[in-house]
Image (cartoon, rainbow, N blue to C red):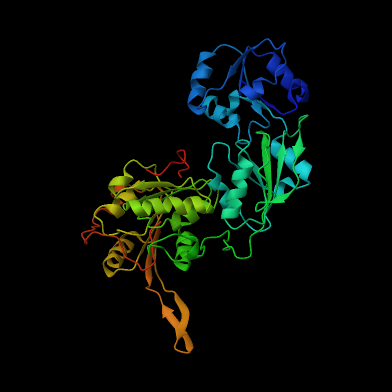
Amino acid sequence: MDVVGIGADGWGGLSGAARAALGGADVVIGGRRQLALLPPEFAGERVAWPSPLRPAVPGLIEAHAGRRIAVLASGDPSFYGIARVLAEEVGPEGLRVLPHPSSVSYACARLGWPLEDVEVVTLVGRPAGRLAAGLYDGRRLLVLSAGAATPGEVAALLRDRGFGPSRMRVLQQLGGEGERVTEAATAEEWPEAAVDALNVVAVECRRAPDALRLGAVPGLPDAAYEHDGQLTKRHVRAATLGALAPAPGELLWDVGAGSGSVAVEWMRAHPSCGAVAVERDPVRAERIARNAERLGVPGLRVVTGAAPESLDQLPPPDAVFIGGGLTTPGLLETCWDRLPGGGRLVANTVTLESEALLAEWYKRLGGELVRLAVAHAAPVGGFTGWRQAMPVTQWAVEKPYGEHDGATDGVTTDEPTGRDSVPGADPRAHSHRTAPGATT
């Protein structure tokens, strides 16, 4: 199967090989806009993708079995394009991809930006909140638009997240006769002018002086989160993420995810990291979703329900964080048994009962048992002294490869049930193995 990329310059911009691939096809499948770029004399059958596209791919391929199929796509089909879906369906060996320059390549050429220094965020079929994870002072972003409304949505998000001074440009119909690049304007002053639906938004990020500064590593300021006190404070959170050790493409279960901070920062570690936050309190579950959207990871899946029962239908995790309810019968056993070899489990607590339980598991399975103590300078009369936060006991362990499910035999959790109540310590937590889920 040939997969041909086409630009706004249409048939005239295609290479000889791309034209031959399309001309030799019995049927060409593509979006309506791309199919309209074929010349009138084109003899092959034209089939437009239905919506939603992904579920229709197997049926369309089967319906045209035995015929020469070509797929027509926008720009580079392997860059946020249909080539990925087709490779999953027929295998990469069954594809020949003939790319056209992508809109990102065109945009960097027009702006004079080095492609390797630009972060690309696609909002095609994705929530605008994803953009927030890429907002750093001085950073250059290219936003792949979902349509004519996207530039206005980007400007509004920049203003809301404290990046109103950021400079924006909209590049339209790149590579075609209707190509146009708007004058630069800040998000604060962005005009409500009409733009072409085929556009890319260029952003030069500038943080407002009074906006909260968010870094690229775990340990965001506590003020970045909406919470009711169930929040793993930033220093303990940074240590927790260090023990969890997120890597690209991995999935976290955050069990007892009061405000979602551990799951949020796990996902902020890399765009391909996923997390499921499990929280029994519906009010807190809604709060987690708001925190995730505001901090740029709206793909965080929030499951409202009690653990371990709500863990049954979840995809296997690469790491598990337990921030609350450690003494719930069967919780630790379930989390440990669902971990694959090489998976990590980290549990935090401030109660003596849960600490005793962690000591028992540590004695049996090893790992690392540490106590984290943080003190903050605070006024003491006319002087300054240290105010000690409640110490947090943390157990971190990696599951050996080949470990059988009975590894927890003899370890019991017969303590009273309930969430660990830490004045400001929380539980926290997309799935790389499944499509990002909505709040459930």
